[in-house]
Length: 477
Image (tube, rainbow, N blue to C red; front, side, top):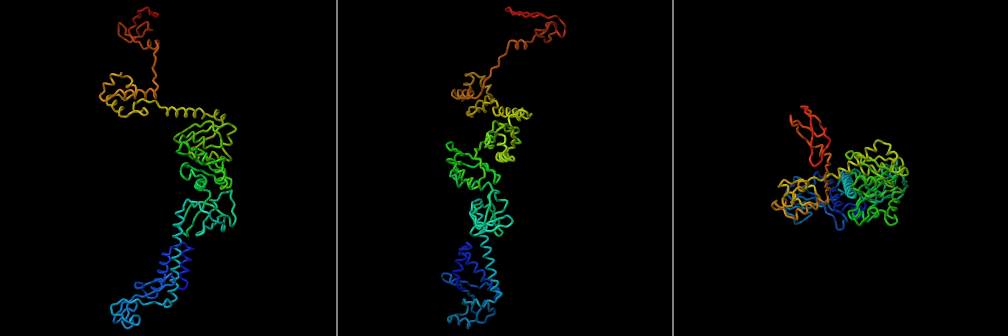
């Protein structure tokens, strides 16, 4: 066991295993060897020397007059060779020379030690890297196989699969690689690295933009076509903070650092908006969108109209820009020029849908309870006395309202003020012609319903004549 202290320190340093686990592993391996040699391990005692300069193994035995089990018992005469004052019934610790272990026992001990250290190392690495899942690590190109790169991470080897490598990036042995820990598998353990996940851009953004790191600016969503384009929707709960400006930085320095890290990949930083039309407009950057029409809100279908000059920008190369916008907004966006929009039948439908949507948003307020900022106690008191509609409230004069028990003048005035501010009162005017059309008379003979334009009763046939006072004499027919 010479050099044990140095071996323990080396294991702790290289494998990252705690001192307690190293010592326990050595104990377990010696216990396994002892059991293999003597058939039991219930009486073994293991002690480490000061500074771990060696290890001592003892066999604990009961002193008896006549031993029946030499592994667990020792006779008095033999015991007194180790301890002259020994007596029957005492427990004696007898040192074991490790050379007494046969080759098979020694091999078992070595195998147990290796297996234990392997399992401990695996568990320690898994726990360490699993805690770093979703974080950025830096390693060095070690070797390559079938396009997959193995990265030296110090304590462990990272697996950088080809599918998680940007098509813009080329790596050579010894290259420094910054990547995201995307997965950690317990077997081996395998630490899977990625530079294509949206979370990788999120972490780079946090490193470059302090406002993102401290949550002053929050990322709504990131979508990518790795190596080509990334769209990032951001927002801030603070009105004094421009989320896009914070990410771009003074003279674009922050966004340029991110683009450099992504090897020139194009990045669009845009403002998230809960209004789908505004968000879709922003999502189609760098294109300038003239109008957005919601075609089917349930199916999340929309139409974006752009000028002829902006059409190719909005679509993007091979449809990349609009495809990323679809994923960012989670809407199906159809892009048309102004001329295409006018020619398509869908144009009228889109305008109608947009109009309907606006009308739904501006839905007429009918009930008192629908008024914004109205006192609900006042509404409840009025409802108890049969006044629920705004029209019913307005039909009541001041005396009728003040007669309601518990209703005060200031409450009435407050409701009237809210109505005046939020409800358009339209008074219908009825023309004289409409009044005359509504006038009805009875035939003097059969009492059938007649109107002034009739000359004979439609039921009995009697001739009719209408007379008017105040010189209002229409033609008699």
